[in-house]
Length: 162
Image 1 (cartoon, helix red, strand yellow):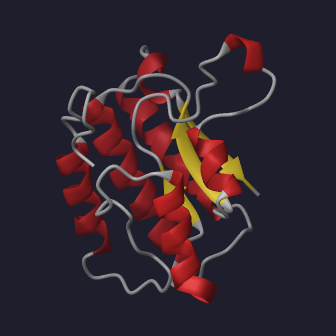
Image 2 (image 1 turned 180 degrees about the vertical axis):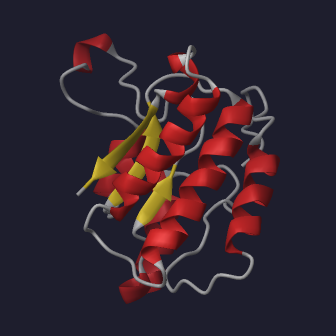
Image 3 (image 1 turned 90 degrees about the vertical axis):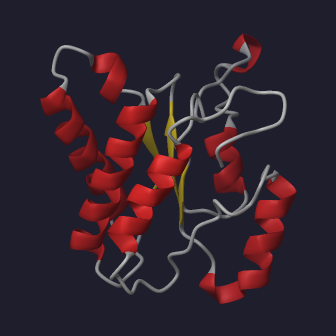
């Protein structure tokens, strides 16, 4: 989603969407679909979309935006209440989020590497056996090799799930 009313535009969103589409261009992975077509997604819209899908529910939410897993209210720091946890409550077994603001170019790079790695290890099977966490790790390690002295670029990405 490249823009949200009242907030600055997400300059890398369209590039990231194009990168993910390139990765999946020739892949046939049941249950893989994107919610990026939702403009201004709310928890209610996501839950409604998921309810309509029934057994073919999404199992992964990749939230590539600034601070999607950051607890912004210091009084709730021990509660783990953030956008990523909201997606888990909505039924997504795996969520990838960021712990602080992220660089647009790095987000495009991490997303591309993540989905390529996931397709290599995942094939056509959605699973809960660590493949999502491993795919994120490999993506982050790849970016870390490119920017070894700048952990602020590659360290904010986190996987939530089992």
